[in-house]
Image 1 (spheres, rainbow, N blue to C red):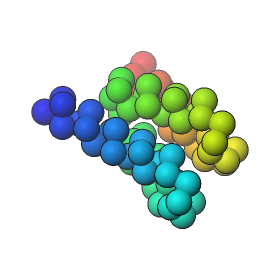
Image 2 (cartoon, rainbow, N blue to C red; image 1 turned 60 degrees about the horizontal axis):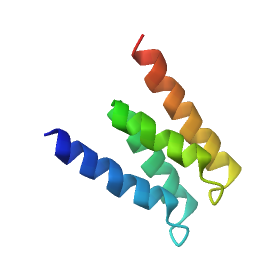
Image 3 (cartoon, one colour; image 1 turned 30 degrees about the horizontal axis):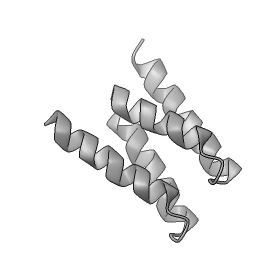
Length: 74
């Protein structure tokens, strides 16, 4: 099942970085990655934060989602 989750995270990350899609769809993908709450999703979100092609709001949302995962793991 872990491989299925990793595949889903990869698909969502691809959607989140596809600049041909609307901002709303990319934002929903970031939120979906955050809701998975695994180490792999955290790493994926941090990669999105570092992606300079995304706009600032999307990068900040990815950081916010990453913070939620970190707080939940305490």
